[in-house]
Amino acid sequence: MDAERGARFHGGCELIEGRLPAGAVIDYPQPPVRGMEQHMWMLSGVLDFTVDGVEHRLHKGDMLRFHLYGATRFSCPGPHAAHYLIAICEP
View 1: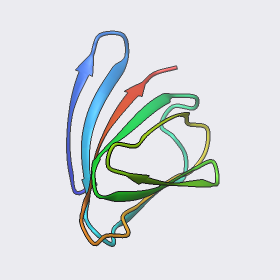
View 2: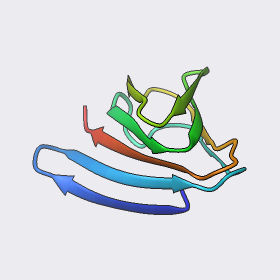
View 3: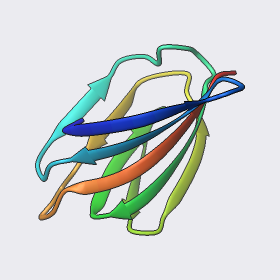
View 4: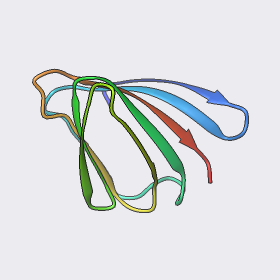
């Protein structure tokens, strides 16, 4: 992700701020830890986020909660950067 800042919390959770430039795509073939829980909150822009083969188009204010078991894809269709927060919790 273009810019990433984060904070780690007691109990195995981490909060990450991400920005993805317009036109950028990031693929993760597998999660670092299977079954980890994530909560994504869109702050601005549009993000096409694919998890377990299902694509979600997220806009400002949208939230998505999921557990990671397979591949994910972050894609920003533009015209502006996607700006979001992700809370990552260990299973």
